Length: 256
Image 1: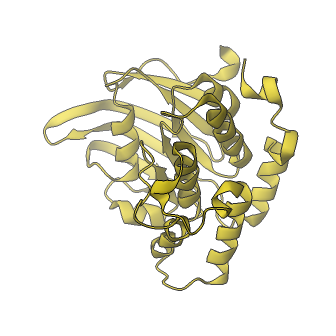
Image 2: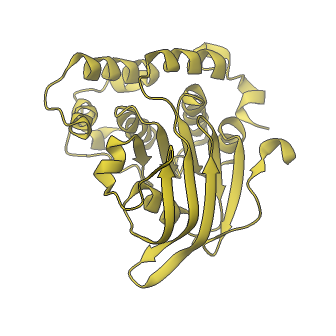
Image 3: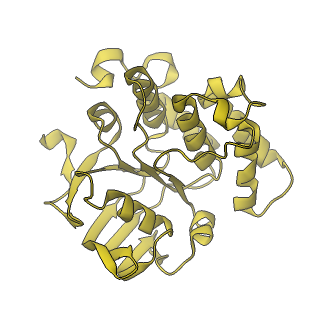
């Protein structure tokens, strides 16, 4: 049984309608359409992704499943610009970005929460959020940045209690919340998440699902995930990768 059935995502202000509407009222960037056509990518001469096609509508949440070694992380990091495209195209709202470096994709509205969280452990929680100023080409804490920090601390209240602590002192769940908050600081139109529930306790996974459900609809999401609870409560459709290829069409959860 999913988190929504067990606890009710409408409780505590985390329901999709209430949370998404509140988030949307603060956003200045609309969710973007992601179109991936005949994508091939990999590592050097090794091709891992073979002719993958994706079409994610604005505001939609797409889940990606598959066994270890299926190419899930390779796919999502290629979309983010961390691996080169060998062939095919990637478009964000109709604009090709497959040749753009990663930092330009961030500027165009793409944000990645990488596998393993990868927060900057030597910096404080606050500094991890502040570093996203650089993604906007700023160095001073302007009102827009301050408003985003306040929004993240409202969404992830435990971070507000730990602003001065180094990120390495946080629990695994808190580090994951910080990684998501940091990605949201750049006001993305497309949010890519790679195994966000990996290694987290079940209660923390439930909280993670609540937060993702809260922002659902205000940003387009592509979510690599194995937790059934997260998938049931967040994504609209899901597809399965096997050996770098899409296995059948992306299915609506209602078709299960």
